[in-house]
Length: 144
Image 1: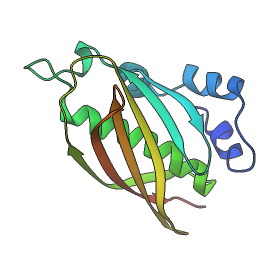
Image 2: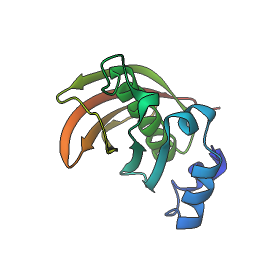
Image 3: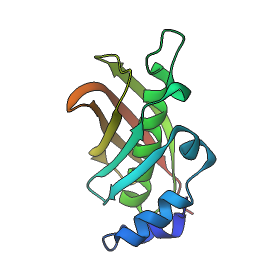
Image 4: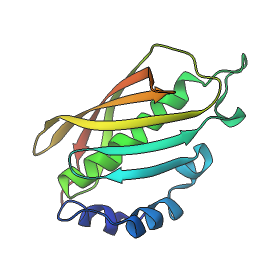
């Protein structure tokens, strides 16, 4: 993940070329689950994940841990941009509403609280425009 580009997003909107670079240099984990960021601003981060067998639990639906991981990735990117500094996850609480077997999961992170040292993010995950999970992610800002 291009941390420099993300830190710059706190001061000016990212271009489509910036998003392309961030997606092409994503972490191995985000690459494995297929996270693709489509919007990154200090107020909102949106990403999509294509559903496939790599996300399934034994009965063929997306594993709950995959939703928590998607939320952690999207919320952490949101936290970095909002703080203009690296952040780390402190807590991640995810609630599940509907099972997902196919399609795309669209995750949107919005701030609930942006403090100097901690943040709280709400991440909503949709599949076919239906709410399937929400997460509450608390992050800690790692300033020098």
